Structure formats: structure tokens, C-alpha cells
Amino acid sequence: MQKEIGEMLKQSLTRILNLRGERINDRLALIDTALQNADPQAIYRYLFELSRQAEIFCKEMREAMTTFYNDLQLAGIFHPLLPYPLTDDVTVLVEGNCLKLKFGAILPFSAGGSAYYLHEHVRNALERTIRERKLPRPFFNERCAVVFLHHYAIAKGIVRFLRDYDNVEHRCITNVLASLSMCGDGPQCMIALDILAPDNQDFTEVRIMPISDFKQFVASENLDYISL
Figure 1 (spheres, rainbow, N blue to C red):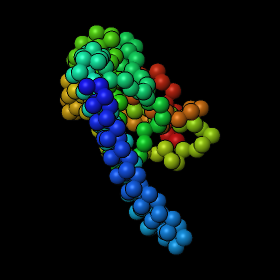
Figure 2 (figure 1 turned 180 degrees about the horizontal axis):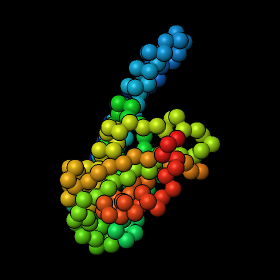
Figure 3 (figure 1 turned 120 degrees about the vertical axis):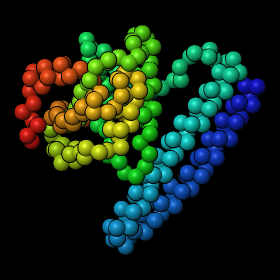
Figure 4 (figure 1 turned 30 degrees about the horizontal axis):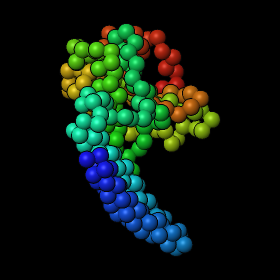
């Protein structure tokens, strides 16, 4: 049984690698031609397509690995309740009435590819914290503030960290927060705020807190950099 499961994983990963590798190589060849022709519109278009292929590749690899892991659990090799092994790209802290999520890097801009991996990472990290800390669901029973703090290294400048307010990356995160920690994501349940925060490194922090604590947060934080 174990050998059969391993062979299925090998076949799935080989198929994905061959298919996506071929399509990624095609885009790289097109980019090379566009560079030789000094055609910025073509370069951008093929780079857009390359980004999408890279995101699809990552999504398909995660799905294949998850299927493999589930098969191992069904075969009795792993305990059914053993959580899927994940990297620590997202950490969750509980400080009083506040939940804090920290990402290893600043949230990406949408480049046409899937950002669903953010949904997966946040959900798994938050579910793990709820399970380990035995937190109530929802954690908040009142209107909350969701504050996105995009920390950026001052030495690198500020322009490339300026963000829109309708990024799909934000929705991936707030959808998980609404389903696991809040009463919902409507205006009666939450407000949201984006802040650029100068720092010595690049990362995004998301703080979820009751409105009463949010007022204290605004009053106590040094937010002079909002005007930058």
C-alpha cells in the first residue's frame, strides 16, 4: 500500500513538473525574444503569464502533496488528527484581546496569478493556534478593527510599498479571519485599515482587536509616518 501511494505521488509530481516546466520555459523563451526586440509591452505580457504559471505550479504541487498526506492518513500510517506539516510563514500571537499575525515578508502585489496560498497559510496557522490554545470560535463577539501594518526597510525607500485598498491578498486574509475569529466581514462586524510603517526590515503584520482597543491603539501608537 505504501509503495502504491508513493508511486502515485511520484506520478503526480512528475506530471506537474513536466507540464508547468514546459509552459514556464515557453514563456522564458518569449521573454528572451521580447528583450532582444526591446518590446516592453511584450515583456510585461509574458512576465504576467510567467507569474500566473508559477502560481498555478505552486498550487498544483500543494494539492498533490495534500492528497498524498491524506492518503497516508487513510492508510493508517499517520494519526488521523495529525495536522499537515507546514512552513512557519505565518505566526499567530494572542496578546490580551488582540490577535497578531506576522508574515515572513511584506504582502505581495497581485500579478495576475493566484494568491490563494495566503488563504491556506493563514487558515492553517490560525486553526493551529485555536487548537493549541483552545481559543473560542469566534474569538471576537464584538465589532473589530483589522489593521494591516506593512513594515518596510527605510533604506529601500517607500514607493514600491505603496498599496491599493482592494488587493485580493487582503480578501484572502480577511475571509479567513472572518470565518475563524470574528462574527463576519461586513461593516457591522469590522473596519479595516492599511498603514505603511517604516522599519529595518520588510514584513506585514495584521492586528485584529475590538474597536475599544483600536481607539487606544491609535492614541498610543506613534503614527506620524502616516503622512509620508
